[in-house]
Figure 1 (spheres, rainbow, N blue to C red):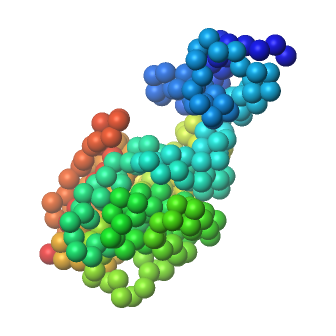
Figure 2 (spheres, helix red, strand yellow):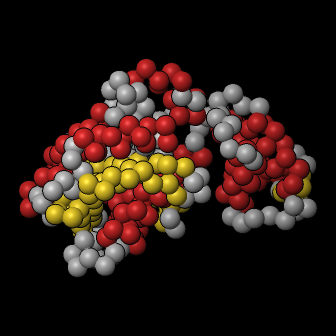
Length: 289
């Protein structure tokens, strides 16, 4: 196998990814970005476009591109995902961290900084993405994450240990696994729920439907807001007097999610948007009076 220049190798990979029916081609230049990301992963550094890639590295790269073309998420291929400057282990069976969730973490960090003894609870924590980002950026915070999936909790604990971050992860349904002493003292509750309606699962791209566990995508409710409703009902008992519930959903569900919080009595309910995509994703509400 003859060496090929990096630019040519990336162009070929980009074309392969563009032709893949398993990938959701929603973002401009997504395929180019992913091809470059995979080559960087193989080489350990960004190559010069005219640099000739050795045969062994070229073969490894092409294998990874083929995996991606089958729909396998990049974090699973690489084995990790970078989220707000921390590197999280990613494993099949656990929800893949999304860049879009950085706005949820940002909203939580803003509301915790400056408090004397801040407390965060991250529901449906998965591999600990939000909880660990907050633990990293607000070291004084007491951080908890819960999830019904044992594999997710194991991975979250592994991520915490690897990063040396103080966060406690417990297996359980929403608030069910938390110590009773936290009642009425939590300053921020975060939730990135599985919000795909049960009848919409078949509409998801292959790269999501075929690779990520169904329980991380849908709660099987008609509107996809079953867990949002439960969080709105159960959070007030755990939140401090001026505590916040922060919920990340897709832009098309933001208005409905905001109504759920408002009907539950939450104050200052707002649909917020931020991050690179600049679309409404995080609903915020202050604890009912």
